[in-house]
Length: 330
Image (cartoon, rainbow, N blue to C red; front, side, top):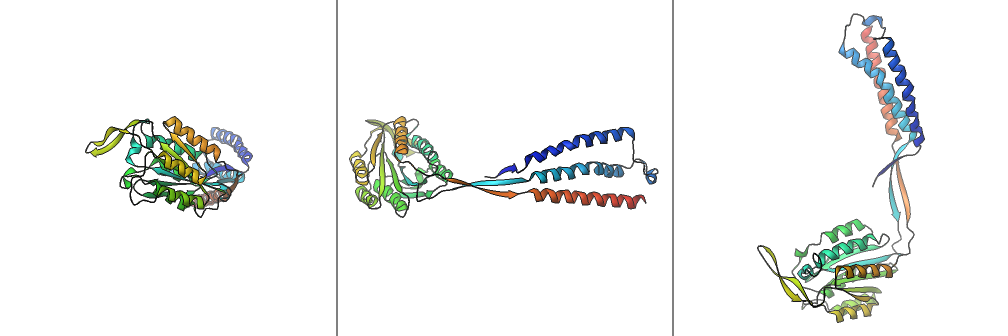
């Protein structure tokens, strides 16, 4: 983002000089109706000459304006943050995007609530690298670990559930997230694994195998089971009018999620409502703290030369017009 400032803004007070100049020009206009040049007495009311004479009058204001602005030194600047990626926390969000995430036990549905809360979570972690993996029948890395949180937020807000065949492969989602963190040099590596069901893909990576992979790479996994207790209105099919919903039992493989958390030194949470899910993210936010003092670097670009060139151009143009007028009148 570019910002504009003046290095010496007090020089802009020189514009007050225009007041006496304007008063002087007005007084001159009242005293005489024309310029006493003998050779223009037979020229009549030439509009061209009047325009040139008007340019002579206002040119000094433009020249002085450019000079005053140049002296005040306008400059634009950008700000960058110097961050040491070895001192922060690297966090991969692994999000279940199966159609059951559209269940309406949350308002308006589970996925919409998760998106809103995840965006808020990302916004609160300015010093950490964050990435995103979505999974259904297979896992898909949406964005790698990055400090560009705007890009992460954009991907979270634009999750597309139709990219893959429906199903739930929790082990695949965890394994892909772990693979992104494997080579990280951060002091702490975390996966936040979110699902609302249980794995139902036969050839997928087993969840506990992915958990062992996380453990061997010193990656902590926080597991979040999303869904109310009992029954929920879930999409079971689709027709030409959209999704068809039916009351279905909420089945979350909590035992496996608890075991994943235990193996990796993380923690399991059950979010039975939007408020509970928000509490879960707030607790994780408190548990995983970054101790980074990021420094800001300012990059400046000076623009005073532009105004000096403009002033010089107007001055030369003014001199040229005066020379042409002198030649024409003589």
